[in-house]
Image (cartoon, rainbow, N blue to C red; front, side, top):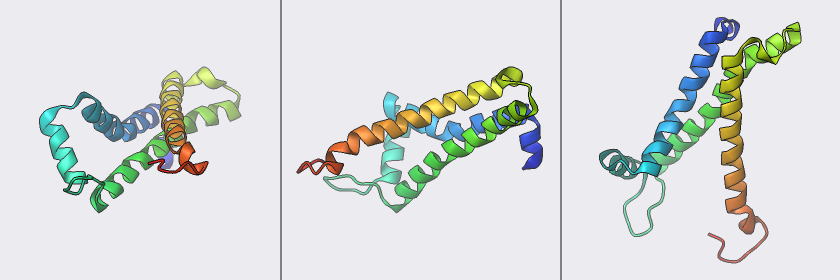
Length: 128
């Protein structure tokens, strides 16, 4: 793990690859690519009138969501090391760009979750 953090190119590549599963899932969901979309829905949801995530679907979604912060940490570690050494933020621009993109994506997801669940936290009846 230490070798990954020391080589800034491999850290950027690994951070990018860790974010790819969620990006691919979101692309399939948004675009509705039919063979993949129906397979994903059948794999992760229960059958019935009110489709809900099954146990595998919950584990799968939480696992893919946890890869985002891990990718951000791996991508940002060389940038933080360079700042502490006095080289500045732009010493590894690929790592900085990857970390910024992952941070933007994470903050967008968290903001979307908060906006979606805020009425429930405020006690609005029938908020689901």
